[in-house]
Every structure is written in C-alpha cells, then in structure tokens.
Length: 318
Image 1 (cartoon, rainbow, N blue to C red):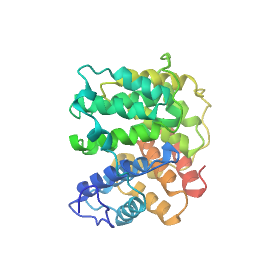
Image 2 (cartoon, rainbow, N blue to C red):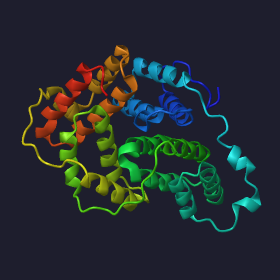
Image 3 (cartoon, one colour):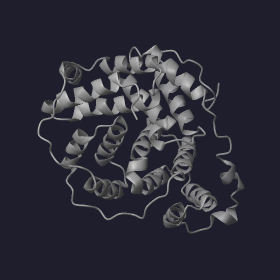
C-alpha cells in the first residue's frame, strides 16, 4: 500500500508513527468544502496529539475511527497538474512572494495556483511557502486560525520535501472559501490577554481557535512576527475582561493528568467517538481543552473542568 492510499483500520503497533503520518497526509489531500475549523487535518492532528498520551499502547478505538473517517473521504487527484504544466519559461528568474500574496488577496484562483507553483519550484520545494500562506490566512484568525495551526503541525509530524505541495494545496483549497481581509496593524495587547479570552469563551468551536493561536504565538516559525501581528489584532477585538472567579467543576482528574499524564483524554475521546455525535468538532475541542489543562494556572482548572463536562454532556456542540 502506498503512503497516499487508503488506510484500513490501522492496528496499534510499532508502526503507530507511520500510520499517523499516513493519516495526516491523507487528511491534507481530501476534497473538503465545509468549515475550516473542522477540516479533516484538524481532526487528524487532534487525534494524533491525544494518542501521544498513550503511544506505548495506542487506543484501537481512536485509530480505527481515524482510518475509517479518512477512508470515507474523497481524495484530490490533480494536485501536481499545475506543477507539471509549468514550463521553465513560465517559472521565470525572479519570484516575488508578494505576487502570490496579491493573487490570494484578490481571490484569483487560477493566478494563485500559478504563483504558488512558481514559488514552490524556484524554492525547490522548500516548506517556507507554508509559513507564507499561513501568515496570509491568519488575516482571518476567526476563520482560519485553528485550521492553520493544525495544518502546520500535521506537516511538521513528517516534514518531508515530497509532502510540501500537498499541504500547500490543502491551505490554498481551504482559504479560497472565505474572503481575506487586508493585513492588519498589530495591536498592543499583551499575550497574557489570551487567558481571559479563553475563560470567556462558551462554545467549543472557539476553544479550538484560542488554543491554536496561543500555540502559534509560542512557536518558533520564521514568519512568527507576522503571525503575532495578526493574532494581536484579533486579541484586541476579543473580550479580555476578567470576570472574577466563575463557578467550576471538580478538577481532580485534570490535576492528576497534569502531574502524571495518562489516558484521561483518550478515554474521553473514545466516549465522543462512541456517542456518534458531532465527533470531529468535539474531538478537536477536546484536544484544545487538553492543551488548556497543561497551560492554565492551577486555580483555573475548575473552569476547564466545567468546560470538559459541558463538552461531554452536550452532543450538540454548535
């Protein structure tokens, strides 16, 4: 079976990393026309992160679900056609990333593909183009923040040159679905403002975005200044008011996980899968809450626990 072929019910074994790399690549090459926040690459990277808690004995329920989910999606088949059609004369000697950015901004799909192919070919398949596209997409943090984080991390799991173009196409095919605003001027909001943004969020879909931009802010990408510019602008438009100490739930399981790790989030993920309700979005939201358990101050864990209970008690999360 080739790496890009279907994966049928992968079994937990020493090949876990290979199975996950295959699933992540497949998730990036699916034909997808729905909300970017629940893109297959978001779901698969969330599953990968949760499985990291039990890598020595991975959950067969999670792996089987992931394999079946991806197998049920249609794969793009013509990703490389634009590269094959690009003549040496068409590549040119001088390439400006701004030409690609302008084409994306204007929504010219054909021009976007041509400019992306030129940048990719001249740069000999460098993954730097992914960061350029990510910075552009973050001009709409609300629409693309969660998707961009998970897409970049899905590629980073196995950052091989031959996989770059598939992830370029994943981003291009996704960001064409919503208009991009012009680049924003960075704001003076402190990164500490991210904490109250999360605490004030009530909907699981918003937790995904906040966790994603928090992790992007703490990343080491070359284009990080551009990421921070757009994220800071987004923070400036969020509710950063401290609302005292909202009621919470018993955080004992969170405290134990934070100290010892374990399969707490794996078991919750298995319950979501077995519920058969809003699986993709709820898995992505659960993975975001797993991040917050690790990052939030200990006195905020009761609030995180309450959000986890809300996620598990509510099948309709939108």
